Image (cartoon, rainbow, N blue to C red; front, side):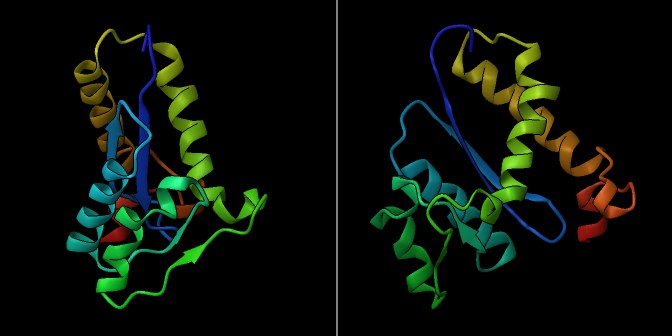
Length: 139
């Protein structure tokens, strides 16, 4: 935003690169991350691998997969390549969209990110997917 920070989390299908769910928060607490995870599990099934950030090792994040019988996999410390696909998503979002705008409010930012995520999943071509968008390949 023009002033202040917001935090963004996304749950992604690594194979297809589709963003399954995402959330924005004013704080770096784990609840918004857990909400995104719950939505992804509800709509698409068990999660994949996570980063080592405190929100991803918190009880709020980890209790949901445990209740579902899912074994949690966490990136190795300092292993940026373990999380390459989500890092690529952040880079693409920032350079193609975020750095080109200066939103005033959190709700304005959220609406803009929603628009971009829809574009990313349904229209943006991916070279790794033969030039097709993730949602087309996913279904």
